[in-house]
Amino acid sequence: MNDIHRIVEMLDSAATDASPVDQVTSRMPLTLEQAYAVQHRLVACRVQRGDTVSGVKLGFTSRAKAEQMGVSDVIIGSVTEGMCFANGSSVDPARFIHPRVEPEVAFRLDVDVDPGDPNAVPVVTQVAPALEVIDSRYRNFSFTLEDVVADNTSAAGYVLGPWISLEEVRARRDLANLGVVLEIDGEIAETGSTAAILGDPLRAVAAVKRMARAHGFALPAGIVILAGAATAAAPLPVTPGSYVEATVEGFGRVSVSIGGDHG
Ligand code: 0L1
Ligand code: MG
Image (cartoon, rainbow, N blue to C red; front, side, top):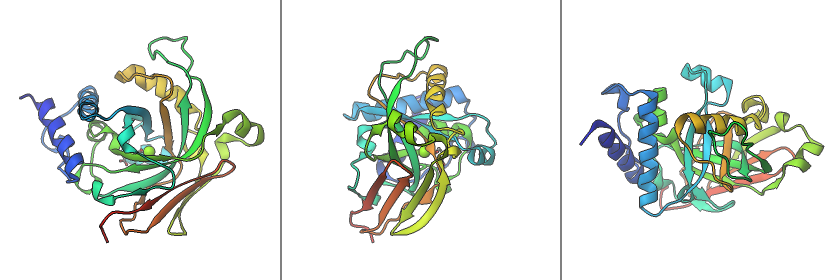
C-alpha cells in the first residue's frame, strides 16, 4: 500500500466516522500535486459509494483568509449531492467533527467547459445565496495548505437558496458590493460584503476554470460553483432546533436548522 493510498483511507474514514486525525504533513511531506491527487481519490471513494459530484468550490477567496494561511492563490475542491441539504431543511450535526458555517454566493454553470480550451467561456446566468458547512477532518482545524487541499478543502455540506437571474441582479445592484449577514438563532453572527469574495464573486468563475485546468477538474454544465465565503466562518451550532440563516442583500435568504439526537 503506498502513502497516497494510506492518506486517502485515513481521510475518508475520518469523514465517514466524524473522527478527527492528525494533519498529514506532520508525518510526511506532501506536494500540492500529491495533495490534489489525494483529494481526487477521496471524492472518487464517495462516488464509488453512490454519491455524485454536484459542483466545485473555492477556498481562500478572501484576502484576510489567504494572508492568514500565508498563501497567494485560491484552492479548489468538489462538492457532492450527498453534501447538499435542501434550503430550510434540518441537518444532523453528528455527521460532522467540528463544523463551521459560512455565507457564500453560488453560481450554476450553464455550459460544458473544457478547462484546457482557452476559448471556452464558463457561462453563468443564475446566482443564489448559499451556506457552506466546512469541517476539517484534522484535529483542531489545524492544517497546512497541502493538508487542506488533500482534505477536499474541508468541504462537508452546502445549502442553496433560490436561484435568480444574474442579469436581473446586476440590473439593480452591484454584485461586487452586496451586504451579507449570517444569523444564528436570530442573532447576527457575522456580517460582510460580497466584495470579500475575490473583490467580485464573478471573478470566482474565471478562477474555477483556471484552477480546474491546473488541477484536473471537470466542468460539466449544470454544476454548482461555490464562489467563496463573504465573512469569516462561524461555528455551526450543534443544539437541535438551532437555526442558521444567511441573507445576501437583494437576492434572498438561505437557511438550515439543526436536528438529530445531539443536545
Ligand atoms: O471554503 C472555504 O473557504 C474553506 C477552505 C478551507 C479552509 C478552512 O477549512 O477553513
Ligand atoms: Mg467556503
